[in-house]
Image 1 (cartoon, helix red, strand yellow):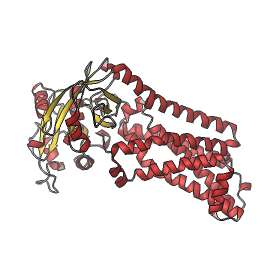
Image 2 (tube, helix red, strand yellow):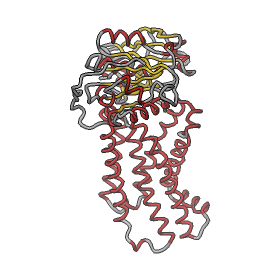
Image 3 (cartoon, one colour):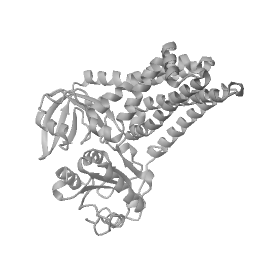
Image 4 (cartoon, helix red, strand yellow):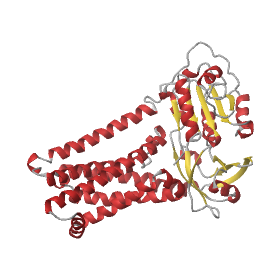
Length: 461
């Protein structure tokens, strides 16, 4: 691995933008979410005097109310995380989806506990078998029947998100299934207002809860449906031309009207729908591989699966394109240090190349390290070398298979420090496969890079 010259002793200049790092802002949002959960707990506590808990059946019912409150709140958080609010998208990006996925298991646990506790509590109180209690409740309370439908829909979504099932479904079917989360949330809200003891006995709590739900619903309708449809009609995107980057990789150039009004940044991604035979019914996320111009977007696709290989065969100039976005926080906006290290592997090189185009600096400030097994596997080499000749960056191929020792592993912490002496003073952007990203973060941390200065964007669904 080529060694980068030792920089001047003067420390790198840091900018004051943004004030909070991506990690710090995520922490603040998590704390705010926990604060809301504490308010729900306080509402339950104040509405549950000790006189209401005189025996085991009543204890089960009160516990059911608590899990129902927390489950309803967590469901609202889950929907809000996927509302695609532009400010949060540009500051946190894929971490929102990661948090959404992480919380999904806890949501299903709370909702399942709620159902089990309700049935157990009333079974003990009425001295009736659980199946009879269930049938009696469904026949007597229409709102509970509606909530049961919502629960079954959410349970199906939870099961579909198990890794093995998710892989078998594929991105398109998995994504389409998750659209039912919105009607499930509406169905659950009706049950909460009509049957939730804390809301039926407290007018202020009911009105506040309704207002919050309406606000989240408005955000979803605006940013997931209305604005994408308006962009489609306004910008009229079409394929301008297609360039073969390698035997299995193509770059697709998209033109349209007033593309600059999309406010897209290098490194962000869109969910693309190409209106071509055999692929029009599918949408997939692809990052921009170049910073947008006034009337052109570019994405680069590597044929690694059935869908991407089909794109290479079916796409033609002039075909219409629908693009939902831009999404993601993986942009130069996250930069807070003058000196930057970009590390890309495979098709993960494409958003980094777009970010590199937008970074101010010279060949000493910006290093672009591309991870590959052999030189034949490198992508966009000509463009990166041209940027190096222009003095915008230093291109650093990192070749070889991953190993366990310093001699075998080109990404070993010691070898990274040798190649880049000021590594611990750099802001690092990483993009590649989940395994490559995880291994690189581990090596960077061992090499002395603080986690708050490491930025990633995982496109694994």
